[in-house]
Structure formats: C-alpha cells, structure tokens
Length: 136
Image (cartoon, rainbow, N blue to C red; front, top):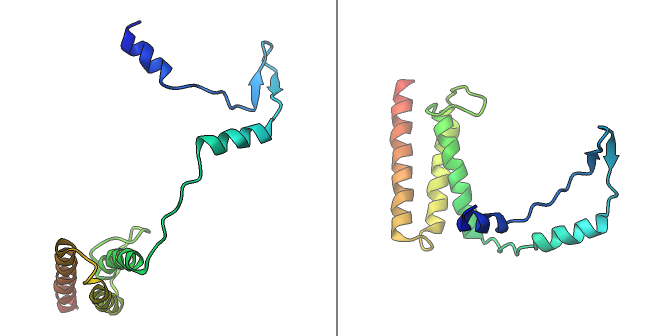
C-alpha cells in the first residue's frame, strides 16, 4: 500500500450504526440502543449552526426570484411542474408590475450589476408579455 493510500484510509472513521446484525447462523440480532450516547455523539458531530437573521431586503430579493420564475409559466413559455403549458396573461401582468414595484424598494440596496440584471429581467418579461398578448 502506498503512503497516500494509507493517509486516505486514516482520513475517515467508519462507524457501524446499524441496529440489527446477522449472527453466524443468519439470525437477526438486535444491538442494545444507547440512545443517550448516540444523541450526544450526534450533537458533537453536527453542532447547531447559527442561522443568520433574515432581513426584509433578502426576503424581497427571494420573492422577486420566485415570482419571476412563475411569470414565465403564466406567459406560457415554461412548463408548470405538472408538465403542461398554460397561459394566464392577467396574472403575468400583475406579477411583472409587482416585481417592478418591489425592485424600486430594493434599488438602493443592490449593486449596479444586480440593478442591471433586475432591469434586464423586467424588460425581457415585458417584451414577452407584449408578444404573447399579440398572439391572442
């Protein structure tokens, strides 16, 4: 065995966490559960991480992203999760207008690049809305 293989073997520790095993006769043998010990080990191996506080600006950015993805479905340009194409231009228009209003609230918090990306997204949605409206 080479030295690098030997180091790789020592890099991790395999722990058998199965609650049942088979004995030499093929019979199921239950291991005694030491739940308190297992809980302590789990707590040590995965310490609770602090969840950062969420501010309104990050929530608005997230909501814009979700609403933007839905707009493409309402425009009939993307399939829904069920796999079908359907068009609802009324909802698409309301969503696009809402994204524009929300983007105004975020404009001071976004970098110039992020502002440009948001404006490009809105422009694309508006162009596609006009095109889809013309088809009806």
